[in-house]
Image 1: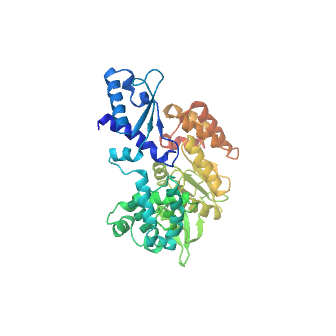
Image 2 (image 1 turned 90 degrees about the vertical axis):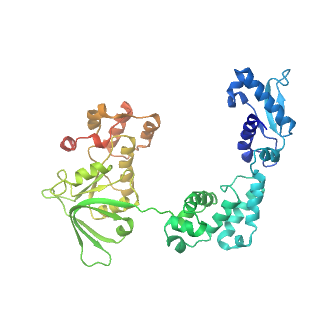
Image 3 (image 1 turned 45 degrees about the horizontal axis):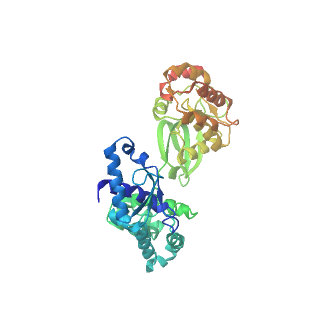
Length: 402
């Protein structure tokens, strides 16, 4: 078979698994071949080669051709798939039917009557029989998924992902490739992601902060004194915090004020100043790491519970505005934007970057409940189409403007 004939068949092979033909319906039809092989409209030799390949596939009984009126053999209207099995045989590929049959055989194996796999089998079997697409690609993948779903959460938690993968599959990377497929499958079934259920969503959120005060942990009689150094805690430790006391800055009556900062470099520059001082009035600083992870959210909630006010300093761009709005929403208390004004944006716009239409469209997510400063900043960003990164702002000048 010529290479061009194989390329024509490859177009059909790509569409066949989701076609009506695969489900027993009408023949798969493909037209617009001049778009797939544009040379056939400008090069006589290319057109001749294409028509020869069509004739070759017609003779083999794999495809049939429908020609334009009065242009038989010269102007093709469409090609139709006549013999799907021969198509995949010619391409030396397993057909979707054979793949589906293989998966159904896996589901018939005794181990798939285990209660941990029964729901999965009941979901897949009728879809495979009806020719519907499923997230699993072949029988071998389904067998490997079966081993995964037979794991207990205790077994899953007992080893790093790659060590567990070697134990299950003698391949250190296999499990990492299977987890997204398992997640798509369980979500399609209306269940929680398999990675969450089995404890394979190996996420270790942390929060970095600097403050003056003390932290009391459950089970520890002596509070941990914080003297302004940068501290990083995982979410597991945050869950043990029983009491947080933030030492208000001198000469600043009222509740302590915590500053949330979006970007790492700015956080470290400001945190170095904590002993003896952040800008006046601040008792501590927290690195939000962009959109806050679960550890950042937990720590900010602890700060609010300790009667602290939260200020936030982020990029002067759509994401920066939305991060500030997100923090306000998750804390369910007003936050104060710091150095996030339309005036500051105007000063630095000449050093900013052009936003694309997708980024600008995100400004529509800014709500009327957002602080006035954020709404004004959002309007200025939308008017100019410019974003200003936090890292280019002179902190000395910005602090003076606040």
